[in-house]
Length: 167
Length: 164
Image 1 (cartoon, each protein chain N blue to C red):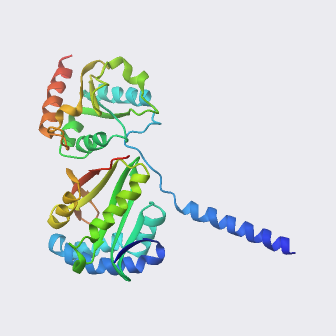
Image 2 (cartoon, each protein chain N blue to C red):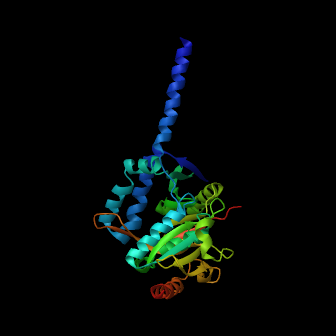
Image 3 (spheres, chains in turn yellow, green):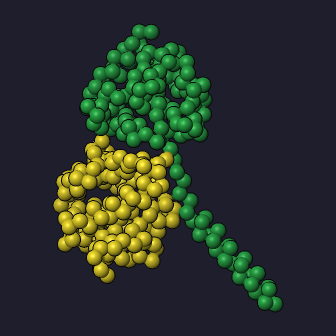
């Protein structure tokens, strides 16, 4: 039975556990081991996660299957009425079984209530599985973006957007 | 004595609350800012255009409009960006119920009853070259917009601006 709970700074080690399982498997074939290590140090240290939660206004949720944490996600209002999905990661053994859809539905429901117009997400251009997931959920590819993250590393992304229709 | 303790507790808990709020300093920016001084922005854009021999490309839209958001991303971040940077001074002007910027946009007679966003191109003297609803760059009713069609229009207007 899936359930979704809000996450706070107390859940950081839990989030890191999920990341340690998903990230190397997903991104090592795409960007290589060195860049994975670099990005984990950039975005997933306790300090970085705390900053995202407290300073940048990212909302975090964790999805549990009974008592077992299987996924987490984060988003914020990036610009007026425009929300950005920053992270959505599901441990590899649970992917493709509706966990992502359940979380996305939860997020869309929340931001719709806040008057969102659009939800944006960046997906690595070689992460075909993720792109398919988002397109199936109603996202459209709009542009490509190459983001310089320092030390000669780049994130080569698709930007996908979904229209949020308000009642 | 009891009163003092309660009072102290109250002060303490109140300061705790403000402390946690101070930590959340996330500020919402806007793509199309309803509070921006569009008249002043346009003046600056025209000045830059004059100095650099470019036209001014105004995108009229709002953060309330999904189409405006998509079009803005395509112009300002996508593969059209290098061309636009080279030939145009790009300016966003908000249109929303709270601020329609009629004083600024009024003189340009743009198709305000068609779909938003709308583009207006001015030469560096502030004379209107052309204006269009972006709807016609859609692929049917589909988003995103068709970029080669946008580029065709912008190239044609760039040449028209150079002549005038």
